[in-house]
Image 1 (tube, rainbow, N blue to C red):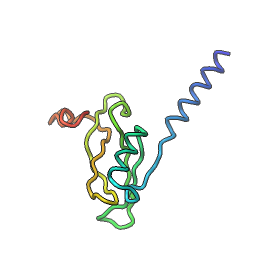
Image 2 (cartoon, rainbow, N blue to C red):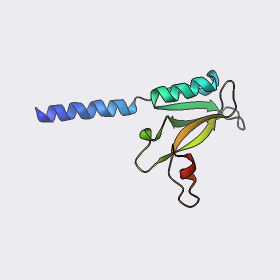
Image 3 (cartoon, helix red, strand yellow):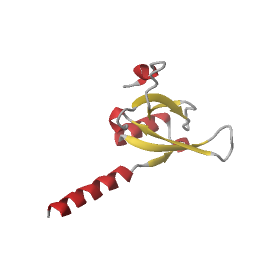
Image 4 (spheres, one colour):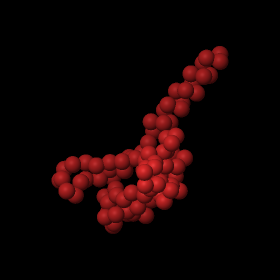
Amino acid sequence: MKLLIATTLMVLTIGQANAISRYQTMRMSCAQVQATVNREGAVILRWQSRNTPGLPLYGRYVSDRRFCKLGEVTSFESVPTADNPSCTVKQCVQPDYDNMRFWLHDR
């Protein structure tokens, strides 16, 4: 019985970890992208490269550090949206101890 419960909990946890929403940023305003990230905690954002037509770009963006791996911090990045070519969002990164970049961006 204990094995069944443990297995069920593991399957549920794995299923939730893989359930991350994906959004096309160019179909949303900057405010919509930011609200979506904050509401869901972690999302995949996708858009087309401006420099290389047809090249899809994407990344995983988070509302805060709770959605990062152990040892990672958040850093401000930008993605293009329908109304803003540089919409600010947070992304998990490894800290850069050489220039202490993470102290300025980890929130």
